[in-house]
Length: 329
Image (cartoon, rainbow, N blue to C red):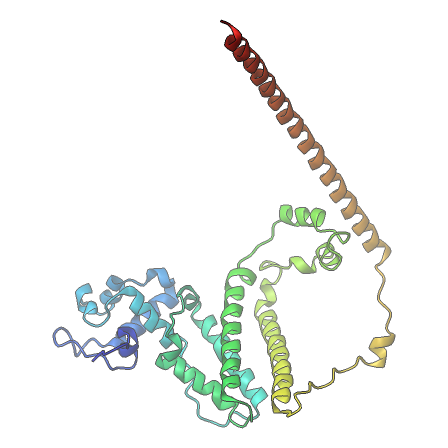
C-alpha cells in the first residue's frame, strides 16, 4: 500500500503497491509487462511502446494493463530502472581501479544495449529505484577497501553515472550518425584557419577533426572501445590523485609527474612545406571570403542609408509644410 510521500512508481518498483484485485492476475504481472515493453523498445525504439502495443503482446485489452501501470510515463520509469539495473555478481571486485573500471563499462554497456533509455528523462527519485540501488551497491563494492568518506564514494558514483549517460548520448547522436559532407568540409576548411583557431585549425586542415560515422564505419566498435578505455584510464588516474589527497592529513597533492628527458628534449615538429602551403591557401581563401562578405554588407548598408535619407527628407519637408500652415492666420 502506498502511504505518505512514497510515490506510486517507487512503490511499484519495490513490489509494495497493492496488486489488482480483478483482471487477468495469473497471466499478467508487472514484471512481465515491463519485460515486454523493453523488448518492444529494443526492437523499435521508445516511441513504439504504447499501452496498446504491450497489451497486444498478451492478447489482453489495454484496460487490463492500467490495472497494473497507471500511465505510460510510469511504465517508462519502470523500464529504465529494469534495463539499467546493476549486475548481481557478488564476487571479489579486485582492486578498486579494476572494479570501478568494470563498473563504468557495465554502465556504458547498459546504454549500448538499450539506447532508448537516453530518451527517458531522469526523475528526482531515480536513485531510489531498486535497479539503481543495485547498481550503486555494485559500485560501492568496488571501493569497499578505500579509507575515504562515504560522501566521496557516492560522489564518484555520480561522476561515473553522469559520464556513462553522456558517453551514451555522444555515441548514439554524434559518433554513430553524423555524416560530414564535402560542402561542410569545404566551409570549415575555409573558415577555421590557424590564424584564428591555432589549435583546431591544423586538425581541420589535415582532416583529423572531421572524422565522422562514414570514415570510421569499418572500425567503429574498436574506436569506441579505445575511446572508452582512454576515458577510464583518465578518470581512474584522477580519482587516484583525489583519494590520495583525501587520505593525506596534510592535504597535500602528489607532485606532478615530470616529462621524460626524451619528451623534454624533443623539438616541436614544424609543418611540412605542403602543410604550410595548405594552411596559407586556407587563410587566403578565408580572407577573400571575409572581404566579399564585408563588401556585400557595405552595399546593403548603403542601400539602407539611402532609404533612411529619403525618409528623413520627406519628414523634413512635411515638418516645413506643417510649420507654414501653423503660421497662416
